[in-house]
Length: 160
Image (cartoon, rainbow, N blue to C red):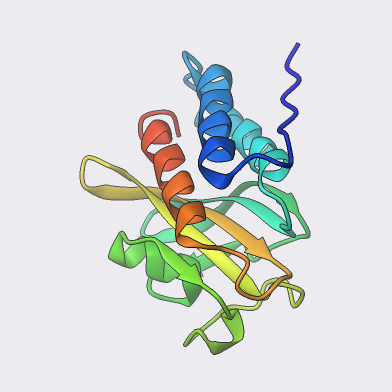
């Protein structure tokens, strides 16, 4: 039985360390990428406060396709270079956006989202997926959040 209950008073570095440890415990030895993404999406929802969406987009034949997530229904396909997710996938760089409405080409899958953090998962030099976090709060994400999710993405490189 798994019972991951993060302490809400933890500083971000410790919260993300515990999140990555929990993801490691759940995904170690499991070869199914979708199962691993589903469990990690659930962990993100539990560990990261103030979210309205947490999950994955997978790279499929040159575009991002919706993967496992927690939250409201989302856009199914995102072209590379479009929106925050497509930009992260095309550049291979983390996108930390304080105000999604000010982001050029933002794709409004959920009108409640105000800020977004997208981290690419890179394997052998190619983006294979992105981790996408949305918040209804403006400027919800800080560099500490980006660093924590980047460590999680590194762990998941060969698990998704």
